[in-house]
Image 1 (cartoon, rainbow, N blue to C red):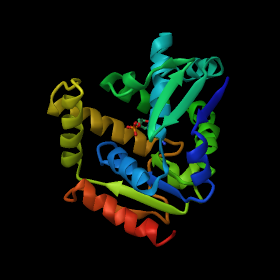
Image 2 (cartoon, protein in one colour; image 1 turned 90 degrees about the vertical axis):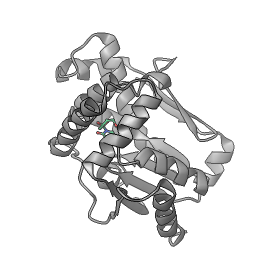
Image 3 (cartoon, rainbow, N blue to C red; image 1 turned 135 degrees about the vertical axis):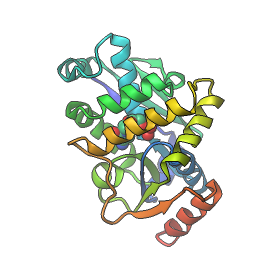
Length: 237
Ligand code: DC
């Protein structure tokens, strides 16, 4: 198993004196969009941990295994090499040397990622990869257990929520734009199923950290959410 990341010398220098910002929340809440913008405003690295779960799920599908076959998935992990490369704020994800970045956002991979992310061996395998990338600081890390587990001592923690109908509409628009949608109703049902699984699993369920700041994004614009976050982060700089 190999793993790694490549952030480049300038980013590396900035990271030595930056904060760790953790953002958690369910799917469709706008996490990725605001995390990316916040990272860019701060000149920080944007760490999309969902992409690592998605890449793992992609590899499971590719291998022909059933995503629910926890033992089989666990046995597959040592054969995988997962690598994240960062260039000007954009991450490219490689599985065994193959760039899979463009294949990670399909409904099939989304559902599979939610299933494999409930396997403890997968979470344990991805933990050091995430920490290795983020522990130097100057990072905005986004996922489900950033504030509770991966970066439990993060300098700033946010937990985003939004009305389920709003989240389904947002996700639907994203999928339509990417040419993947099977309709709003299906997207809404998929999201509810994934949410229930992510929130109720026994390991690292999606729960807010005690010291996380809540932001309800239902009626806020992207800019308003980023401004609120920026104000909190700026007070810590
Ligand atoms: O954020 P996302 O939709 O790309 O995440 C895909 C799946 O991965 C999601 O259903 C839950 C899982 N995940 C997780 O369990 N822990 C994380 N830190 C990030 C994602």
